[in-house]
Structures are given as C-alpha cells and as structure tokens.
Amino acid sequence: MLDRYFVKNNTPKDVFTRQYKPEHAITRRRFVNESGRNLHVIFPPWHGGGQLYERLIDGLARKGDAVLAYYFHDEILKPNTELVRASYAHMRDTISAELTHTVEKRSYAKVRLIGMSIGNTVLATTTSKFPAFDSAVLVCTASSLARSMWDGTRTQHVRAGIEQSGQDLAYVENAWHDAAPATHIGALAGKDVRILVSNRDDIIPTRYQMEFVQAAQEAGVNPNVQTTRVGHYAAIGGFCLNGKV
Image 1 (cartoon, one colour):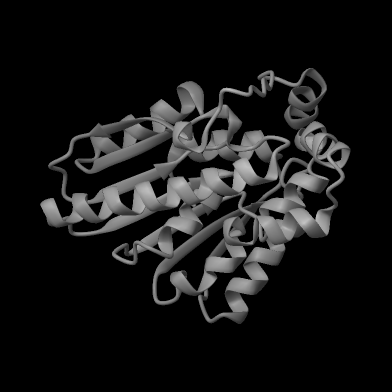
Image 2 (image 1 turned 180 degrees about the vertical axis):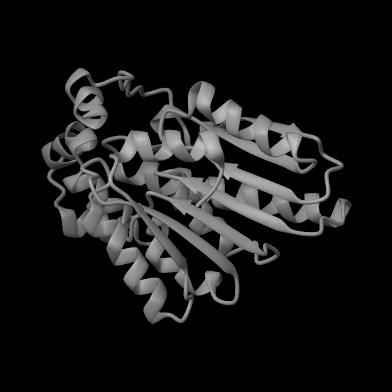
C-alpha cells in the first residue's frame, strides 16, 4: 500500500528546527484567475501536495473559476504543542482576514473551501471567523488533530517527541482543542458539505474520519459522504486529479 511505503521511508523527511515560529506557518499563496466567477480556497495536506496539488489548482482555474491556494510550512505539526497551537491560531486569523478582504473586493457567485488531510484543520478553524462561504469539501478529515496525530502511523515520531517532554494525550487534546475540526462543526450548518472518507486509512485513522462525519450529522450539517477503499495518499491524489467528491 502507498501509505505503508511513505511511512516506512518517512517520505518526505521531517525536519524540526528551533528557528520555526508560528508566523512562518503560511509560506506562500497562489491566486489564479482572480476574476473568475466562483472562488475555490484550497488548504493542502502536510508537506504540501506537489504536482497533483498544482494540477488541482490549474484544473479548477480552467473551468473559469478563481483559485486561492495556500502553502504551509512543514513544521505546522511538530513535537511542540504550544508552537502547533499558536501556528493554527495564526493561520486562522491571517487567512480569515485575507478571505474577508478578498470577497469584499470581488463579488464571487460562490465561495468553496477545500481541505485535504491536515489542511482540514486550517479549514475548520478558519470557518469560525469567516462565515461567508457557501460550500466545503473535506478529504480525509478527522474529528481531532491531537488523536489523529497520536494514533496515525505517519506521526508516531511526533507523538514520541511529545511524550518525551512529559505530555500525554489528554494534555495535547486540551492544548489543541481549538485546532480540532470537530470544535468548529457548527460553522458548517446550512452549507453544502461534502466529505470523502478513506476506509483504509492509517495516516488519519478511519475511525476519526467517521467520528467527524457522525458529529456533523448530529449537529444537523447533513453532509454528502462518500467513501473510498484506497488509502490516505491515494484518496488525496485521486481527488486532486478529478476535483470531485
């Protein structure tokens, strides 16, 4: 399986530095076809999306829509709970302000938010301060950033570093409460919400994806849920190729 290959080879390699600060979390933005009819805002997975991410951006733009794609620093997830918490708060505040300014500047017919993997954490926190979106697509999301990191096969080294500092899961979950996608489910009420669940996912364990779906349903969000039998990376890659859930 593709997921096992990436976990075994730790590809791409994770480098955690002392120089990283929360204000480094957003590394750049790519705004394509700004005058398009609709606006798609894309939040990438950890370590970005590479060529497939760029293909998704270009494919949506070719349809005549505007695409604002974000790029995040690799260290938005690391064995430092306070830096992670502060990073997501910074991304939430910065992106929500930027989107508010963008939609005030141009009258888009529809605004759609798209999140993949850990990008859904940024999407979810952003919705708490930016309600002016019409729909959201969440690919391999999770109810909890803390628990999906704790149990995910790709992030066991992050867990180990946190445990070495003397912190347990309860501590991390409390510290990252505002970064948990489930915390912001209420912001999805009344929106067109589509969720793609990988039922063979060990990176963001499937049970946490289904927890998010259940919480959304209980909150009256009524999402359109589809499942795939491929793993985490293949699910995200497939979405980037066709842009549909």
